[in-house]
Length: 128
Image (cartoon, rainbow, N blue to C red; front, side, top):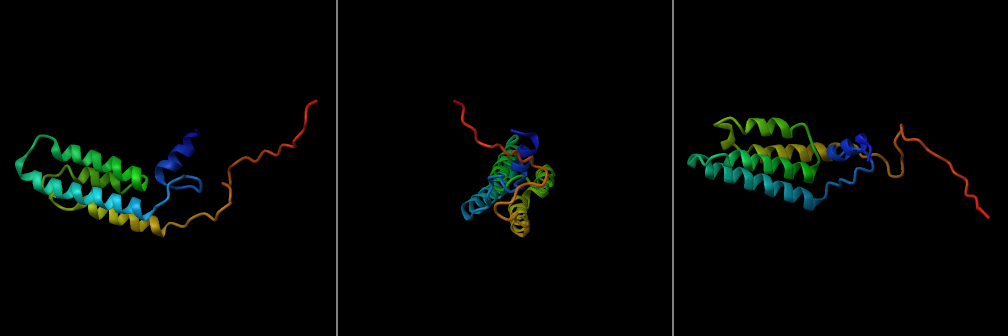
């Protein structure tokens, strides 16, 4: 797999990325975000060691897997390290913003090839 293909697949860009933003993916991403925010709100005052950070890593990996990587996920992950900010529903807001931006992204027409892709024409021959 080419490095650029891997990056396109991670970012959710490119015509053949394989990442399709379906309703089930969106619902799962919202569910993960809401559960993470609620757990951080509930567990926050108890001060359990690294519970917030573990939840943030899980939320980052899961939403990236479901929605594709988006640069807005990184500031959300960093913002969660601040003491008061982790009480806000930042993951839910981030997922809502990423989903709305993904829906506004133009899709390449079906059947079009990448401009920098090489085309190789081969004539079939039989060997006797």
